[in-house]
Image 1 (cartoon, rainbow, N blue to C red):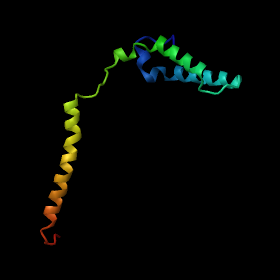
Image 2 (image 1 turned 60 degrees about the vertical axis):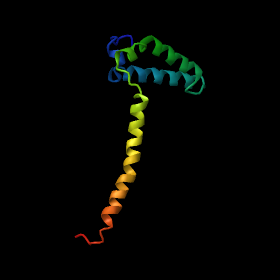
Image 3 (image 1 turned 30 degrees about the vertical axis):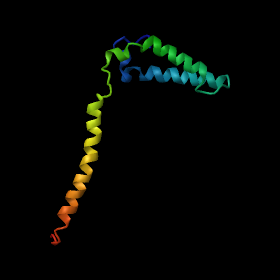
Image 4 (image 1 turned 45 degrees about the horizontal axis):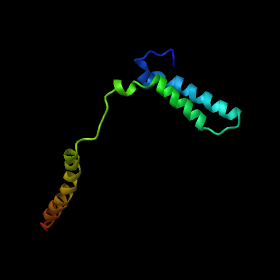
Length: 101
C-alpha cells in the first residue's frame, strides 16, 4: 500500500488488491502457527494499517448524517397516514356495485 498515492488510498478499486493480499498473508500466518483467523493479533495489525493508511479517507469523502428529527418524522408519518386513506379510497370505489369490464 506504500506504492499507492494518498489520493488513491480512499478508492476501493485501487486498494482492494493490496488489502486482499494483506488479508491473505494474515490468514496464511495464522494457519502456519495453528491460530484461528480472525484473531486479536490480526485485528490489531489491520487497525494499525487503517490508522496508518486510511485515516484521512473520511475527511476526503462527503459524510452522510441522519436528517433532522422533524424531517425524519415527516418521512415516517406520511406513508403511515397515506395507507388508511388509500384503503378507504379503494373500498369507497369498490362499493359502486356495478360490474366493470
